[in-house]
Image (cartoon, rainbow over all chains, first blue to last red; front, top):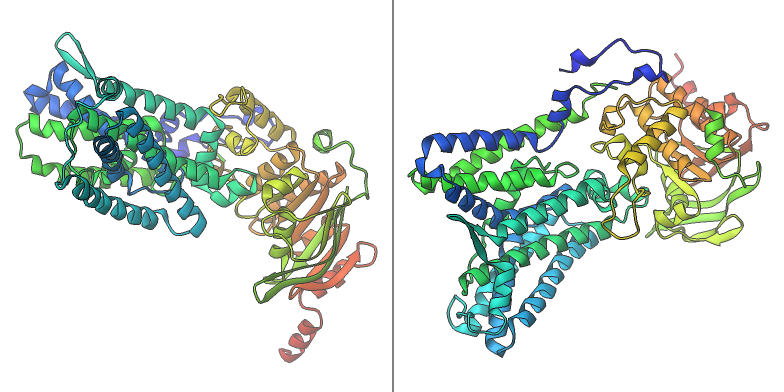
Length: 353
Length: 271
């Protein structure tokens, strides 16, 4: 491909020296293209093989499934573009829900208060993650692995202390349940199709993240701190603030999904959320985010989450043993990493220099 | 190209006026003294060349001037006022811009994003205000073009440019955003002859526009082509401090190459 573009070079500083990269090349250098192609193939695959996949109802069920993973994955994607990992993103969802639920049940206060305090608590954890990573220089993989274990243990330990079981009491009679439920976990019908608000929230967060990344100075900073933090710092980008902000964004989105889970199911299992952190990372990587940072976009991450939703339900619709799902995810991840590597080479190789 | 550089440069700069003055500056990292007794003056419209072997203290000197590490001995004055920078942002605020050899740009980002990194144009003051993408692309393209750098597509990742072009984009960016002192860290080290020439022309253009340039290199030939004032660092202190009139290329090369030590070595190796 690179050869076809190499015209004999005219003298520099002549306007004719300007070429536009070919369409194929411009498309290939976009992070989400690989994921989009994969998504279409998987979609057709299940359309053909799973008859019950072919209805609007199941399509929206897939969207719902994708949204629960996709909301946090958007944050994790931004964080990964910013060059860091957050392994505590899976359990913080349950920490948020458990905190709200047990605080309000134990003290008998309005759920709005519990939700607000839980938000502050989650943002604090995000801040702590970011602060420790930036302050110590220890890779975020290790720091957040620590946070992950602390939260996982605390989720179980505190729940056991407060309720004597490993699940939280039903909170549907506490004040504020209905109003909060409307925000975080309601659904409406269009014909026979059930649309959960979490899908709309997911779309909203994806669009917001896409706007931030591509069209704001913060987005520019996110790419820069992920691509080359030293260089970013040298031109005056506040690297520490940007990265801490990203960690806090992930824990905010974790809190949001935690609220959704709580108000959808009224009660939570204290051991939940473990392992989801990898689903977020897979969604981001499948969506074209570079593991080493500096490259990716929000739409790609959304497509990654959609692929997750399609396969997790598609396997069931097709009547296969759902145990195969994880094996499939692994294959997807490996393929995505290979595509990423190829794209990065394409994007940085001198083809039109 | 000189004209366009000059039109962006600070008009209040007068040739010869001191911009940075260092007096007996030193820096210790714990028990290790990386730098001591440095007296250096960077004047407007002058190129001050800092030469030295690896480990001579060049990087430490840059880090002090660019705000990455504060000095802990002596005084640094910028425009006559004593300063001690705690961040690169602060140094930039005083018009001191540093272009590093290896970390001048973020290679996966587009040329225009790199050009405006850290000084983006936005439609408002609020945090999520949109970038003026079209305008930024036009300005970056026009500025680079005026300065003699033609990139084929302003949207291409800057990693696809050649090393010399990347250095030039970084220098052009610093000048466009009002740098008064340019610190160039080994700008020609990784470049071929032709690419080095492009960068050296730039250095001369910046000097003619009235900027103070600190040119760090270990190549005396490159230094002598553009320099007004030469400083050689050895083991953290100054081994030579002369103006262009006082020193010739031969002496500079000899000093740089190790001077007497080299003579001794060639005597020993004589066949």
